[in-house]
Length: 438
Image 1 (cartoon, rainbow, N blue to C red):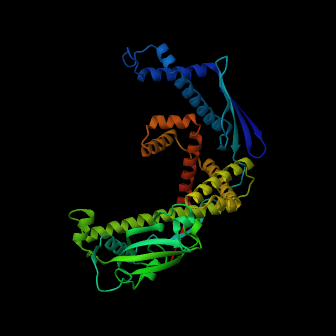
Image 2: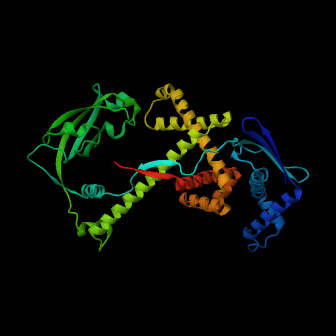
């Protein structure tokens, strides 16, 4: 295999690969044997069909898989042989089998810049205590009580905080039905019949339950809500929504006792309140540890990014910024923002994306350098196990899934992502942790 790397300014390089004809023939023959051993050809027992028949029937599949295997092997070899630190492998071009039987291609690489690492061990991070308090366990038990409460009808009094109300309602803006005013569907906000509302401050819309307090059974009331800034439907932010409500039923929650019978109902026969409290405590502890790991990673990444300065390849920065901008636009559209509003915020989106992309790319470079220094690697078995797990989650055949990624040239990128996560785990283990007392 002949590998040539032409290094260019701004962390760019062009990789040229030539693979001799005998290596190409060997790869093709190996794949042909694999197909022959598994192929089911009418008129032949499994594994007994002539190679010529197999070669003709599966010519396209064999050639595609052969090219994919050769490219991926060449990329891995070039990294080791030339000691390349590659962030982006580009898309191979001028690829194919030549008249003399050899195979070749070229691709444009983005290389990690030369940089001086800061002290990355014992990075100081501060996180909340992971201790689970009795108060937190009690709050979880109260939530369970509310979730499994029975609700008895109440008569002879107005609705109060803590009740459950059953209401019919419809919404307007400036006297116009909500969906007419918006010119599009508004989901549950437009109106509902037989809608259950828990009379708590944060239920439905902020301030809604408070304004319903004192409403008599069967009575109507208009509730005015100014839609807050963080509301997901951007078209409504800052507008006053008038909700015409008719109170159909008042229900009072009858909370279950926290006893062994309640524990057995939730967890199974023989379970006790001690078991229930222990399960809640374990769950809270797991969530706190997970949150703290994420917080440690955020602080570590912020520290590393602030300590290292280097030039980022412009094409890579623009590509990542555009990807993030596109993602912001999609999220804005899903949240209900109009095309006009999205266009107005396009520059803001791109500015935010550029800042985020700069941090992401810098961090990736730095983590790859740490991986090199610490000899952190991702083995083939680790890569295959990860991909098999992903295929299982997606309910796809693992072999077809992995081969599809190979053909798309995505394996090096996935390996790099796994490597970055592995280095982050290493840095979290090495960090100097202090706990914040609240």
